[in-house]
Length: 492
Image (cartoon, rainbow, N blue to C red):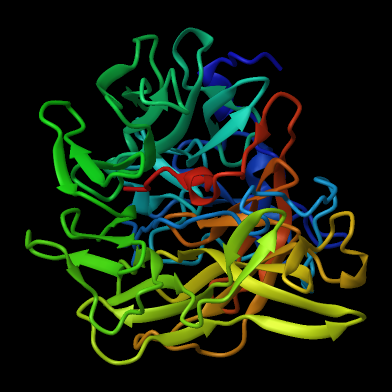
């Protein structure tokens, strides 16, 4: 595969999901290798687990789902984003059978298969959007490396990534815009002040990226766009700026803070500032500290359905040293956007004794599901001797035993922001989880490879066999935490 892959390859043959033993299919996903069905029909999986042609309803109902994406922070582990030293090709199945894949065609309206005609994305099956009047694969954007840092885009179900860089240059931090027809990224000097904030249309054209601005005197970091009406980014360590996606005047909205996140209305925003915690701006008002949030709060995430805000915090002020770097021992909380009351603990730290020390954990990289009912996060396990920490799975952490460095969990959350049931182990040795906008798929990074797996929205259990994007050309990066989290193309 060449570095400058043809964009059309993104919409090539589907990587087939596994079915139960002896079955041709378990749902419509498994029938998409049958080729293009006749007009007005699509392949479905019948009660005998066989693919058969059925007429497409002429008046599909509206999709009841919503879309969402949020911001997060430093990668689980040493702060350098180590993927716990695991083999990229040995993902563990968290206790489910590969034949229990979520039925992607049972929701109202979500019944049109890939390549078939559509009038709106709500017609299309999970993982698809209506593009040029046909249902096409949603895209995922990541930052990778092939000897240089590249902003990359790929169809979620077709391995083969395309660089957004102009003329093969460096790029990073790709972010889709509302509607999914544009993608922004930083190009050129991606680690310094000379980097350019650029935008390209999706699908890609031969046109050069439209450069909106440069970093000026500070590096462009922690950029966020969808669902915002403006593109926001952190000016190195001096505050947050915004610009319209068409360019124009740059506005400084804060003089300090980091981790900006947009609310569903595209105008309200949240961010965190060291030593003072979570700030929220609503209705165009000046940002104010979120009432009830701890001063250690960081990395806020708007729930796009309920009034809850997700964030990490370290109320006890506990730190451990990975090498010479002090790392916050963070827990995961929720609190209403309006503030008030005590934060609700969603995932805490843990500790168990071992010879000469303990195996402990902290929480990182949280992300809401689009329906606001689930939170995905990373539990990072580490060996602690004195105050010296080593991520499990790495040399020197043999006392961890079977504990892995990074595991992804999903936790159901009720409308009040409280835990509902126990967490579900979704992926072992993995990091940076990200829900698809229809809530049926989770993308994450395992051993430098992008992985996508279906999730049962009722139980949180992983479903079917994961789709893995091999790192034959690009290694997906994790070292800058949420800046490197996979971003999904919006479905609307």
